[in-house]
Length: 381
Length: 148
Image 1 (cartoon, each protein chain N blue to C red):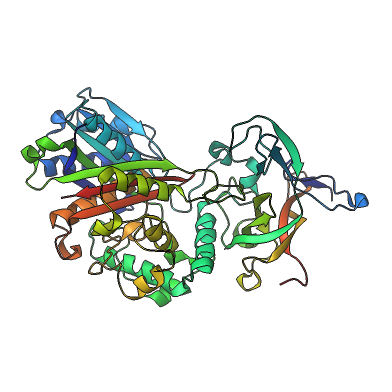
Image 2: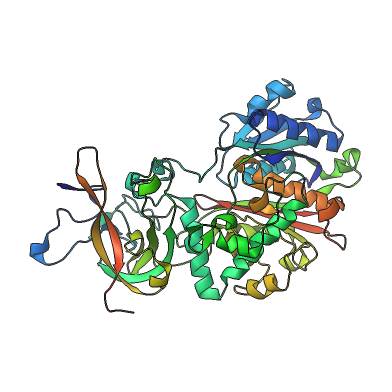
């Protein structure tokens, strides 16, 4: 199988853009990724496009050029971008094509995500009584985790404050204002123990990644980044997952753990080798839990790691250096490619004020979302 | 005011106090591997058997995980009172011993009064009034009095 390199990344900023459609944001992200790779749209041999709100992301060809390439649309919950990236990488791995693009775009209305519960294999009454809601799952999961592993409310506030602080350094971020731990703890309680400022918000944005066969990478880039692993996993019976009206007595690890273990095995790289990390911080608690679920610490160690500043840009385990979902918001189709964009900048040593010191060599991204789907990628320079 | 269940077949209805059993949730049990689900389903999530039998769940268990819902969920699908009429509620999973963990509304929404592992019991509670003026009843779990 061919190895895969990333030779271009592009982003449309995340936030609120009343005058720009999602498709237009996708086109802007694609143009920036193409320019970064030094290639033209006519050079691109295939594309995968991810979105929740846009039925046909492939409509972006109307803005880019009708070159007739295979363009496959992908939706896979909050792991949509990981799925687009995995499919694009596999297209190159299997030798179908040499140069392609993964793009994600979305434009959500403000407020918690919602849907018809029946579309998620849940009964109607589950939504009618107010239980079909992702935010309360995250509240329950971190509340149980805090109980079982001794994590404090202050740690949740510190994680959120860190991500807002990193967002200040990121010109593409949605939230670019630092918030104190006190302000975060004092904001309205939404789902105990999670307050308003501990949650990310659905918003708008787009991101694109140009991929090629690794052996061709130096044609396009003097600092290609290699995609060592991309995995997607769904929940197994016994995992504690979102949108579950019931759970069995038996318990097992979540989809993130499965995706993570598979990615480490695929890459031949372990968590100790990783220098810069992007985790799904739907809320501050999710970042805390995902740190352990992805193998970066034992359950409960987060309390001391956060207190010691380990998750900061200059710390031993830098997490969400661009502000994560908390500062960037979550345009579902684009969110995971925004993570890859940040890791690529970090591994190139071009992340500016956010640059992790010490020439990071290995980067890691993780997505998680409804109804229990996770995606992981591992990148090296 | 007439009472109607939020859905048919998820708990015993009408309330049959005469039998002295109190309300019960209705799940299903796989006759091949024994797993219990709630609500009922036609095929087994563990062994994919289609030999599922209706199974009434025990009314008491322990609080396994919980949170509070302090803002009105998006409507639809939420059908309860929104805006200023919204009343926060607790949500959790109650582990019914050796059977299943059921996700449920909790009658208690004060975090200081909820504790992982506390004993809980099933109750039926009114939660909204429908367009015909009926009181719609759903299930919830409440802390067992006098237990800690």
